[in-house]
Image (tube, rainbow, N blue to C red; front, top):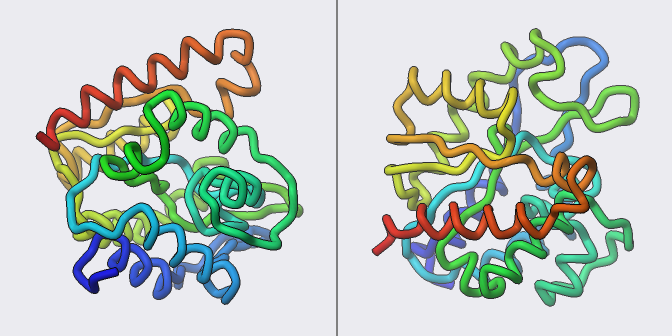
Amino acid sequence: MSKHSFGNKVVDFYSSLQMDEKLPAGIGVMNPYRDAPTMKCVQAFYTKYFSDAGKRVFVFGINPGRLGAGATGVAFTDPVALRELCGIDNAMGDKRELSSRFVYDMIAAWGGMEAFYHKFYITSLSPLGFIKDDKNYNYYDDKKLQQAVEPFVVRTIRQQLELGAIRSSAICLGTGKNFSYFEKLNAKHDFFDAIIPLEHPRYIMQYKLRTMDEYVSKYVRVLRESALALG
């Protein structure tokens, strides 16, 4: 993989990723990128799917969870998806994450991993996750946490834009608090011309499972429209 490739720049970003901001008491940070086996998987994934230098449409989630990127280091990708669908062996267990299941069903409907990741880069507003009382915690679950991590969020978005972002629009996963926060940040910092919200995968899997196929179709339609900017 060329040192100038999108994937190499992603690996460099994650390998140096850390949060120095002081968080409210009782809230911890998940940083899987300090773990050598995880970084090996991260490098394998981005070498496989991002070896070119082309730009991507950026897709932003909330923050990683323990069973997805908090384990594998790859956004919305649990160990099973990483192993069985992406072909990257790992010993991280067999637990599935709801969001990962939806995302990989959607990617299959799009046309498969190679075609999808050639056009899209998935990350999160906070690329590191949070834990409170041994459970996943979202950055917006606590106003003090949200305020504390905002410099980290802004800094890491700016760093990731340099990977090769299409600036005409970004996709936001979550139509509520995540979208509201992202819109305010974007208005202040002018990251993208537009933020396009889609229902969060976990919400779909937890509350709209019977109509999941409709959401998959909606995702594919919206993402295809966004990808037109790539030419």
